[in-house]
Image (tube, rainbow, N blue to C red):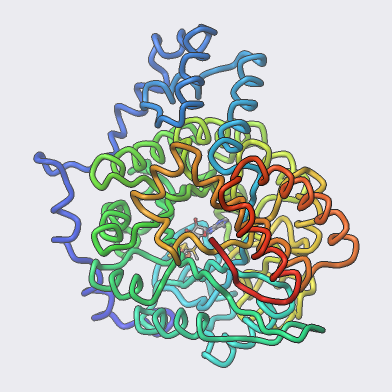
Length: 507
Ligand code: SAM
Ligand code: SF4
């Protein structure tokens, strides 16, 4: 077996009882493949997509921050009229503003292991790929990564990524998450120290018991992407004799997470494996199922798009029939923003800088920056914008620095929020669902966004970025005067204390 994976470890991973209990009375999951396929080309739905009044009615429902039904979403996916598409895009931006204001959150991906027992055909980390240099970071190597990420670049949030392998199983995950939270590093050229304040995890599906341990370790969001919701395609791309070959083990991992007490979960699909419209419908069905069963939808939705990867013919030789064009990708994001209006939407550095800039106004809430997906790459490269294909899962489209990203966002009128207060003071789960649907979350977060942005500008920004950032801050402070009169004085106190060197103040 590749990468020294233990076969007994593999055979004990999947717990059928932790799948079966979630199936419906007929033993069936919540993704109705045939019904979705039928709905997308149903004559009545296709006709409704030309009916301006009907489309506008659906858009208004989304504007009221109500989750759309599969049928309504299928109508939007079929809209072809340029004027209506323009209206949908404008509504997507307006919904984002209503729920999340003009904030955008940045994070860095951090790969902790590149060993994996699975053989997903599109992935450079698959077990059979002998061209990839494999490894698992030691805790010292991890601390060296944090020195660069938190001490030099200024990241406060990470998404840590693990291959599925006994060498990077739950014990390793717990010790790495704990190490990250404990590590304080000096900030270059400044007197004080910095640390990572939120660790999100992207890792293979786990048992309820393991997820509960991860929750206790203080994880932020637990992310797992279904890759494709289409069962036949899933089976073609994930060999059945691998752990990942079990579609339902993956499909129900967010159920297990929520049952384990993690109330902040992120779903996603890898666009380019199957029909993009089907994947949008799959994501929506997933959100509806979680809402119905747990009263909490996904906190974030991710839509990575297939990228080239070292020695990976499936992507490098364009073997997928379903690659998604930029125009269709834009439409997928627009419809997702409307269909699951409360959710955060993550656009990653897989996309090139120009496209990212064009897609952000459609309602993106989070993006990564200064990213490097090579193992140990942050410390090795010390912030240089370089990639090494034999050390990483896939190739990134945008490796721009965090400083340039923040500056670009500020020029577009966005404030980059480094706030990590939400999960530290209980604004998660059902509580945050209410705050998001009513737009109240935006107000709390605006206060914290300004304070943390000030902190970041002082500690990490170039003079050019600081100048643009300060003009955004001035505008925000003006708005806060009327938006939150009751706490405005306390806010000003926190803000001034931050200017004078205090750190990590939040509401
Ligand atoms: N091994 C874990 C898993 O599969 O859940 C961790 C996640 S994997 C390291 C992160 C994500 O990268 C995958 O879920 C998949 O969506 C995405 N990915 C894999 N290969 C890719 C490729 N060639 N291009 C873009 N994204 C890719
Ligand atoms: Fe392993 Fe994840 Fe890559 Fe599949 S996508 S081969 S599970 S790292």
